[in-house]
Structure formats: structure tokens, C-alpha cells
Image (tube, rainbow over all chains, first blue to last red; front, top):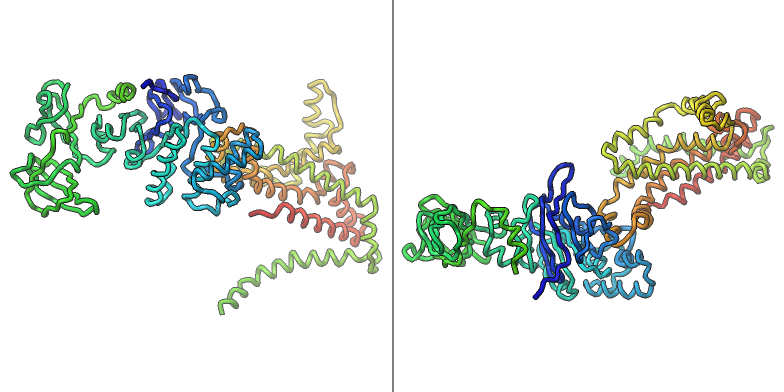
Length: 361
Length: 263
């Protein structure tokens, strides 16, 4: 399948008063997929969104939309619409007029506007709310109005700037399903910005992990979770045990004073590496059956699993998620498959991502 | 008990309002029913509806309207630019600063600037236009009034613009609105309360201007304000002066009601 690229960033840099917020970023966005820009606050994810929306222009580099340079195209001439973090609904207009805003600007006929607004509101399950004032709507409803107001314009790309962050947990989970479902039904590209890694993993086709104005890694949620390219990604996405180690040879890595079989290759002999093992990939067994021997330091009941904090004899901390219970102070064994070991290069932590981002999938 | 304590606290305010607001208005109303001889009459009201006073009323409204419109046209962009500048509080202070100078002093300054040998005419001379009569014209009256009132228009509009959520402007642009449409359909409607407050603060005082009228416009412009002054201080016809004041108060009340329905 050939790629159907809709947005392309080429070496885009954005500075504010000399402060670099986005540092020479290049990537491609394909049509009809759900993308997530994930990272801590200040990582540049919202800047990317504002660049695509056209609220700001890049300091350096070029942004292409359907193959055309759109660096200087103003926001109102772009085929993208945004759902804002604070929804940015017009408080002096009712629900109907809010949704109709873009259509009225285009001078569409009133009958067509009515039909389109009704359809958009049906899409977000807000039929019959046309004449409500914005202040009468709850947070979740406002969210839906904001989405309806954006999709009624039939954009090619919908930008969502942390739209769920103001909602409570239950509503947020519900909206995650709805957004994903909405994207499938509309078939347009969604670019979703969030700092919530669970949200990103649950909803996206592709995730870009950002940190300090650079894309650290891009890939499917599974790629990113299973094969983090560096310490930042491993740490940011889910919980992980990160240990220093040495790559003895292909498929053989040494850490915590022992050698283990693994599935990674292509490193220099005896190259220093970092090893990642997810807490849920560790299984509790008896001392003798375990590949590693640790002492349980503390234990928390988390509902779906127990969270154990253990130490091995070298003083390395091991976080374990297990449905089995252990006793605090007990010596236990930890078992894991070779696939559970993820080996990362230490030195080329950041540069790896750029190359990989474009030739994956 | 609680009810009584609250009433006790109310006393100073009620006293103030009664002595300095209600009583003067009632006095004005009372005086308006006496002629110059001290006889009870309603002739003053009849006289008010003669062409000479109606024309005066009309011109008062007309000048107040002009002053308000020009103040608004200058103040809105000024307030808008102020919200975009870096040191907005400093700029705002500079705009408010002239209001601390006594009104009379400012008016005298304009007498100097607009006079036959003043700065304005010196500039016109240098440009080859030649000396013009600037003082005692409609133009100079409106110009100086607008200058005096601009800070009162800028301040409420500036506050309204400051309260405006900037992402609403982004949203309008995002939905395809041009800069002008964004202003017309989002920014202006959402700052209309500031505009109304500014118009009140300018229109109502402008209705009863008399000092600027006297000094800058001379006898060219006769408004209700100058008429009241004339009746009280020159012709000593307090009854007629009070009658005009009654109509002025009614006019102000109407303006407040029209512009006052804020949410």
C-alpha cells in the first residue's frame, strides 16, 4: 500500500524570543489515521498543532499540506479545524449558532446550514440541544459541541488539543471510545495532543513521543510500548525497570550481574546499553525457579494487580506487577521471557527517532 | 435582630443618597414650577417645547452623539492595540494620566494651541495653508471634548478586551473567519458591555457640557448645559434653568436604561 501523505513537516523549527520550542522536526502524517502527539508539558506538542492550524508560522523549515507549502497560509484558509483545550465555544451564541459559525462564514444557505448542524449534532449525540445556551451545558456536552462545531466544516484533518483533560475520569474514558469511533466513522485524519500516555496508547494508530522540542520516537502504540528507543520514552510510557547493562554478543545481554538470552542484535560487542523490563512482564516464582532473586520491600494492592517493590543483591530496584501475592521481606524469584527484555542504545538516545519515524510501517 | 443590625449599617448610605441625590432632584423639580417672579406656573414646561429650546436639546444630543462616536472610534482601536503591547499597564497609565490634570487647565492649554498665534496655526502656516479660525468652531469643540473623554472610553473597553479569551479569536479564525469577520462576530459582541459602559461614561457628561462649550466654542454652540448656566447665573431665571435640568435628568435616565441591560 502506497502512503497517502496529507501533512509533511520538513526540518521545522519554532522559536519564541530565541527559545527553541520545536527543534528541527520532520515527520509525515497519513490520511485517515488517528495520530497522537504525546509528551510532558512544554515538549512542543501544542506548538506542532498550532503550526498545522496556522495560528503560528515556523521560524525555519517547511510545512506541506497535500503537497503544497502552507507556511504562510492563514488559519482561516486551511482545511483543518481544531477542538480547543478549553473548547473556546462562543459564549454569546447558542449551541446552534456555535456549530453554524463556520458555515455562516462561508455564506451557506440557511436551509443547508440547518441540515448540516442537525447532522453534526446527531453525530455527537446532542440532538435537540440546538437552542441551549453554552452556559447551560455540562463539561462533557460542551466538549461535544466543540467537536460538532469542528466536524461540521468537513475538515480533512481534525486537531484536538488535550480535549479530554478537563473531564472527570469516567467521562474521559467514555469520550476516548467515542472519539476513536468518531474517527472511524468520519474516516478523516485526527491529530490528538495529550500528556496522558494511557489515553495515547488506547486511541492511536500512530504515536509521536515528544520531549524538549524533538520527536523521540514514532510508531504504533505497541511498538512504542514494547520497543522504547530511549530512557525517556521507556520512562514516560508506562512504568518500567530501567537498568544499565552490557551487550555481550547478539542475543546475549548482561545486567544485574548475570547474562540473559534476549532477542536484540546489531550492537557492538560489549557495548554498554540500557535494559528495559516492564513490571507486568515479571512473573513471581520460587527462589530457585526465578532468573533473578530479589527481596520484597513493599507491596501495594492496586485493584487489578499487586504492585511489588523489590531489591536484588546489587541494590537494583525492581517494580513488579502481579496478580499473585507475596510477603514483605520474603525472598522470591522473578521469571521473564527473552522477549520481555528490551535493549536500548545509551549514546544515540535521540537521533534514532528521526530516521525510524519515516521508514516504519 | 439580624435584620435590625443590617438596617443600622444602611443609615449612612440612605442619608447620603437622600441628601445628595434625591433631595437635589426634588429641589430641581420644585424650582421648575416657579417663574422668575416666584409665582407657581407650568409655563416653563410650555416654553421648553418651543422651537428655540427643542433646537437646543437637539444640538446637545447631536454634539454628545458626535463626541461619543469619535471617542469610540479612537478609543476602541487604542484599547485593542494596548492589549497587544508589551508594557500595557504603563501605556494605560499614560492614557489615564491626563485625567488627573484639572479640566480647566487642559481647556486653557487648548485655547493656547488653537489660538490665532498658537501651535496649530503655526503648523498650518508652515504647510502653506495659512492661518485659520480654529477656536470657536464646531470642530474645536468636538475635538477638545473627545480629547477630554477618550480615557473614559478606553478604560472599560480595555478591560473588556483583557477579559476576552484569546482562544475564541483562534477558534473563529480556525472556523474560516477573516480578521474582520472575527472582529464583527466574536470580538465586538463579546466586548459590547465595555463599549456600553464607555458610551455611558462619555455620552451622559457630554450632554451637559458647558465649560468646554463656553471656552472653546464661544457662543457658536449652545447646548442644554450652557442654557442652564445662562439661566441660573446670568438671567437668574432659576425656574427655566431647573426645567431644562429636569429634561436633562430624564434624558440621562433613558440613556442609562437603554445601555444598561448588562448580563
